[in-house]
Image (cartoon, rainbow, N blue to C red; front, side):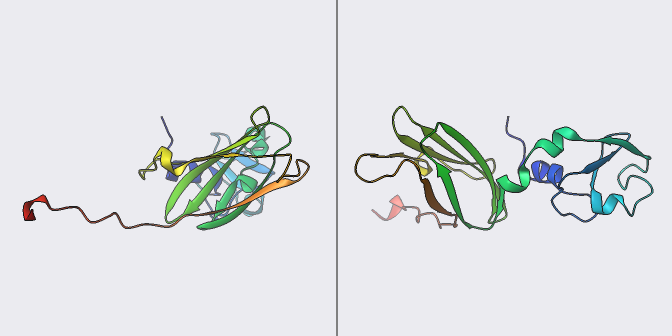
Length: 164
């Protein structure tokens, strides 16, 4: 089951300033999070009005979501391809949240790029596999850089068979 995009985004933003939270993250006794800037101005939790705990949320602080979240329909990515790598990014574009997965398989010298969306119909045709020829075209010590641009495309006009 995929979590709806709005639910994911709400986990990553401060309920007061609506900015992406970065460590340290404070939490109330019921577990609601606020960023450190807003915590300094608050006497109680803005969600449930309980007092704040002195315990930080290390699990949320450990997620490097500020690096994995990209906002905008055109993004540039870089990934090292001489080691097996599995990278995941969240793309917020076109009022939708997309999950971009990039997997490097050093056994086949291949890169698989997979784009998913929970609310749009993204098919396997929107993914691709790239084979890297390290002998002629590729320096394995460098990063593979690629651009991803998301845009809405109007569906082809439906064919009206009643005219034939």
